[in-house]
Amino acid sequence: MQIATLCLAAAMLVACAPEVEGQARRQRPAAVAYNKQAETTVTGTVQSVTQQQRAGLGTGTHLMVRTTAGQNLDVHLGPTAYLEQQQLRIEPGDTVEITGARTIIGGQTVMLARQVCHDNRTVTLRDSSGKPMWAGSGRGPGSGRGRGRGAGPGSGQASRVVPYDTATEVSFRGTVENIRVYARPGMITSTHATVRTPAGESVTVELAPPEYLEQQQLTLERGEEVEITGARVQYEIDEAVVARQLTQGDRTFTLRSADGAPRWQTAPAEGAAARPQR
Image (cartoon, rainbow, N blue to C red; front, side, top):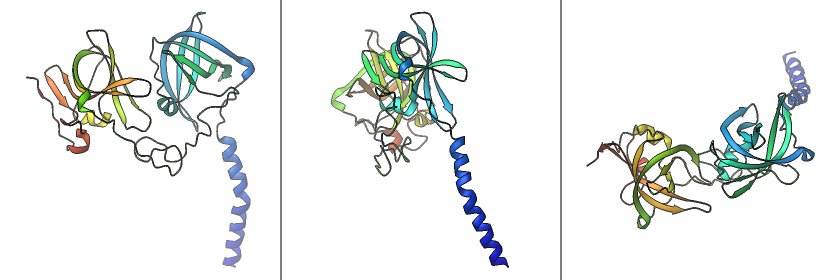
């Protein structure tokens, strides 16, 4: 009798499985379709940049753009992680030219971006038919930040630390204009500061993982003066300075040793305490 009851229960579970799976598929949100017929190109000034979470679709980056026609337009770019891979970094006040299709989401008119022209560079987010470039790119489980990040299952490409060349080391002072946290393709996630030098040069400074800066109680604010010692490094599309030391007021923080080895890999959690500037 017990065996018959168990067999009946198992049969009921097998019969219900397709229905449950179908319900899960129906509840899973679908990506918004791209209407090629509604495609247009607008130029404007970025009012705000936000990251928004949509259930089942991950975190996406949105721009609020004030067009030259005086219209405020909500522009949906794409997954934040994909934009980081493309090194597309847009700030409020930037001028952009966007080609995309207008559509209605939640009763509001928005634009799904296909191409973005920014800072003398064009980034394609969707192909000519509107298919997202991040779809089918091979990204799969294990593509998150940090260890195990890769282009697809089993790729296993570990995140690397930015190389440090002591031969290119420089020191300079400047004013912090912006602070952002992101990872360059294949690199660890780090805090980056944009520093404006007295000569008017805008320098991207790569500091250290945000967790390490928190341990050292190093907090930067826009508008404050800093002194940076670090090595210049040339990437495919831009140049940056990898910081070895940062002086903030009367405090100096050592982020890397004299040969450029990261302190967060070699020092204990409470190490590299700030010392008064001489």
